Image (cartoon, rainbow, N blue to C red; front, side, top):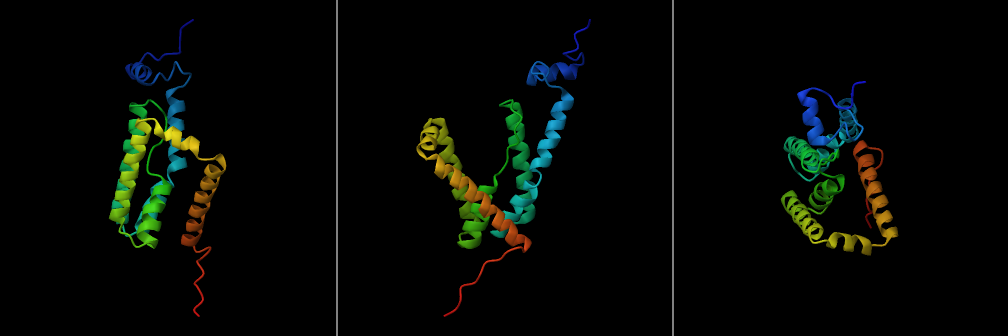
Length: 175
């Protein structure tokens, strides 16, 4: 009986050497289906993130292009450098912070908001590099972690409801 676990084609041998698909019990078809599923699950971000950053005055076309490039670069780095099947791209939290909160509501320019985001990324990289990120993460109580997660989700939901016209902010009564 023939061993059908490894394909005979050159492409199959390269895939096996690079990603160990077949030895991990996967197939090219399964991985392609997983990739399409992951893309469909994250595709809304290609619309939401540029919309959030455009609130702060950034050019929506440029931000859309940048968002796509970051998703492609991050995902390819994760696939070929770390050999992990993760979609990597900009997050909604940072986009809300820069586009809506800092540039939109607070009147701080989006350029300064992007600078803050860049420096926070550098800080988190250094914290991770020197093993301090885990110390900081463990020092925050679980109740605060859960509360922050829920509050960020509710904040993003309210922004979506406002943009859809389903709710609005009440104006302060004039005395």
